[in-house]
Image (cartoon, rainbow, N blue to C red):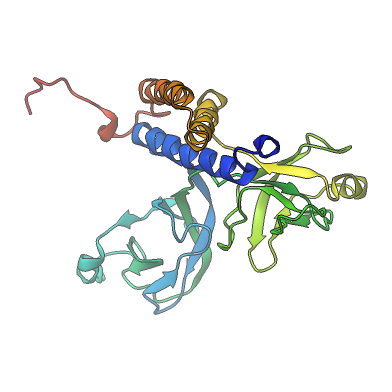
Length: 285
């Protein structure tokens, strides 16, 4: 708890960790595009409607795969460029065989003539959620509020920031780290930024009492071997603020060691795409 020492606040420290976590995640993606891929959001065709709004939480994220699931077997839709979409408006193609992305909208070609409800499954890249440390406010068996106040009156936000993006915390995990239910974890299934309320798989009435006003954290999805980079990133910021050049240089060298380790150790989980094959320099096409 560095805030007690007076050099940096807990909020500043977790901001430093979150910056390094995002940098580490970017490096991992360069080696494995599917590392942070999730598949739990759907949209549907609407009759005679060319486009639909991308649902949260994937609207601001990279779409990696689109699958139609209402047929005898799932069929992957082919991506096309928005600028060429009218070339695919032809009766020789199955309705909705192709898709394109435009801002926060997804379009289907040929334009569907009938409505298909929630049978288009979306895969997208979900980079690590920004971490924070707070106390569970007014919990029920399936929800609690993430407090935004930083005052010392429980429940309050101890470190970090609470996102105001709709469904931002979907798929993140939280863990209770104090009280009788210490260690309890749940996956977040919904988030309402207007009320800062998260929804998760049910807990018991006894656990509701045991987590009220007790500490929880949002967990990092990075492998444990890579999380130390965030810790050393916090040390770098602390050394800068305290003007300790020696500690800063030492911490930076530790961060660089871990980043080099990531570059050399992360490999694709599957080698099913040609882009992962690196031919030798003298390879003759």
